[in-house]
Amino acid sequence: MGNTIKMGIIGNGGIFKGAHLPFYLKDKRVEVTALCDIRKERAEWAKNKHFKNATVYTDYKELLKDKSIDAVDICTPNYLHSIIAVDAFAAGKHVFCEKPDAINVEEALKMKKASEEAGKTLMIMRNNRWLDISKIAKEMAINGDFGDIYAARCGWIRRRGIPGKGGWFTTKAQSGGGPLIDLGVHMIDLAMWIMGNPKPVSVSGGTFCKFADSDVSDSANSDFGDKVEGGTFDVEDLAMGMIRFENGALLQIEFSWASNIAREKSFVELRGSKAGIDWSQSRMKIFTESNGKLKTIRKQRKSPTGGHDKNLAHFIDVITGQANPDFVPDQGIDMIRILTAIYESAATGKEVIL
Image 1 (cartoon, rainbow, N blue to C red):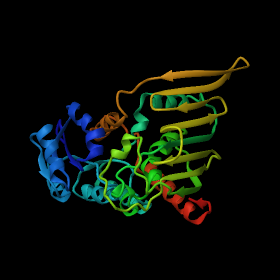
Image 2: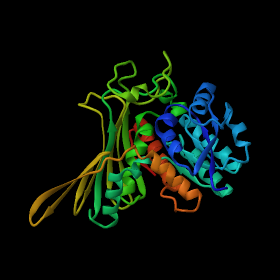
Image 3: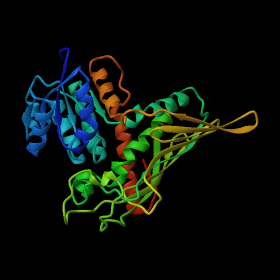
Image 4: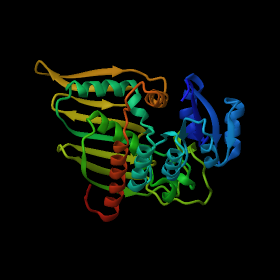
């Protein structure tokens, strides 16, 4: 690699434009030299608006033939993540990929193996780790401020916010599932990361689909993805469950695209023997006791973005040898193992041992 990292972007739709593009417009260490999308107009829009010297492709395999490209950023539907990543490693590229890691454990394992054989970095988006408030919580956990974290809750629940209805988001063969795999990666990862990545040993859960026929929305998230009139909707709109860890801790989860609730919210609650927290993207409340009295401490730091830019910057730091990876593929494999086991538990009505 030269002084400038040459990057190819595979998938130039909503998640690229809304979450990844701002990073590439400001980090001078990276040059976007290739853009690929099956809808050529998306790639051409990015080229004409921002990356005048980039080459446009509609077939990612043609992009991978360019030996000058150092790394690729995969922003495609979920089922393509592992397929493209494995091909990219075979072509000698580093890989950054949107979440979820893959749609099943077998595909996640293939990605890890391919990265190891190529000697290249695999990193999956974990943007919530990079929010200011998340860093505070992680530092507190490392310092032992929470004591023994023995129980937790996390979730991302929407009143009405189904993305890309009828398209790949709501088609299980392409997405891997509904809000559990779409939103669950974010909050489950954040909770486990703060807890010190304990080993999951069993899960139980249930899923529901009650709003497939509703077009009502109160969330900008329902505008995400490409809707298909009369298309497929064979995923859940609500998932709930419990994860048990080897150290005895429990994590209760809830994720929905649509529920009759007050409002949309994402949250992580951790309960420790010394202190507990209530986390949101811009603030955190810490609950503890001092001098025989209960005490609530409020911390608020508004990150300028959703953490995506810092996650991408970290990827560049790693592949240029300036940092050790915050995320490793085994964490992603554990994540997909958890999610697929919850779907299995929902189908069988039984706890699943991991």
